[in-house]
Length: 49
Image 1 (cartoon, one colour):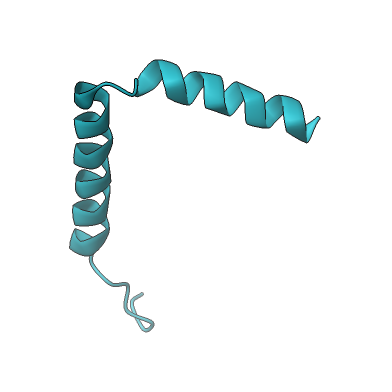
Image 2 (image 1 turned 30 degrees about the vertical axis):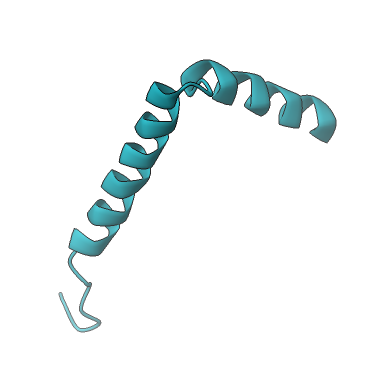
């Protein structure tokens, strides 16, 4: 079962992000956007009502 899921993820990943330079650039841009979004999240205060 896990082997099938791993294969499905690899196939989807190959379709979404081909190994050509455009696909590599798209992966890097997505990673940058995700890291920026994580940095911008406001911390939650413990004592907020």
